[in-house]
Image 1: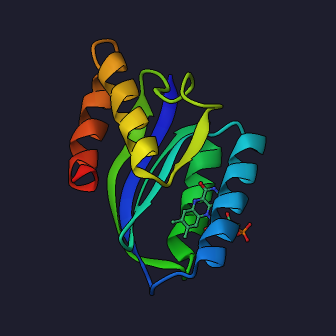
Image 2 (image 1 turned 180 degrees about the vertical axis):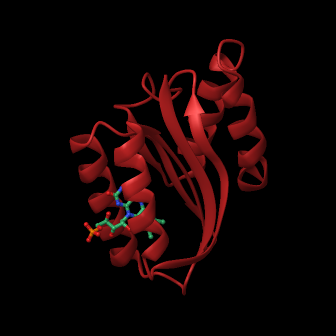
Length: 132
Ligand SMILES: Cc1cc2nc3c(=O)[nH]c(=O)nc-3n(C[C@H](O)[C@H](O)[C@H](O)COP(=O)(O)O)c2cc1C
């Protein structure tokens, strides 16, 4: 069993490239250290994030994320125990989706895993608006 949190949000304002790079760096480093897998996607002012890991760590982290002034309108889509992690085998566990090609890779990966992990299908559905 693992714990999964998935939400969407919108950036509070247009973030400069270096602000985004700083955020991505912070997220990637912290998550690697805390054994958190998942993805963070930023597309035209909106975030989509999937976080997988140990329950207490994720719930604490989500509290900090919700208070973060860099985004707003946080809508939680999934916040519960999950059978297994789906991003463990993707990139090095946690990855930032920045380009169309990252998005295409992610979609291919989720399509491959959806037979064994139904949650992949849900994430694929959420990605649809980001894929146009
Ligand atoms: C959209 C978004 C996603 C974030 N995702 C993470 C994350 O996955 N891991 C993380 O450590 N911090 C993430 N952060 C940063 C946290 O909100 C927070 O700045 C960081 O955990 C440090 O919090 P602390 O100062 O309370 O320790 C994210 C921030 C934003 C705006």
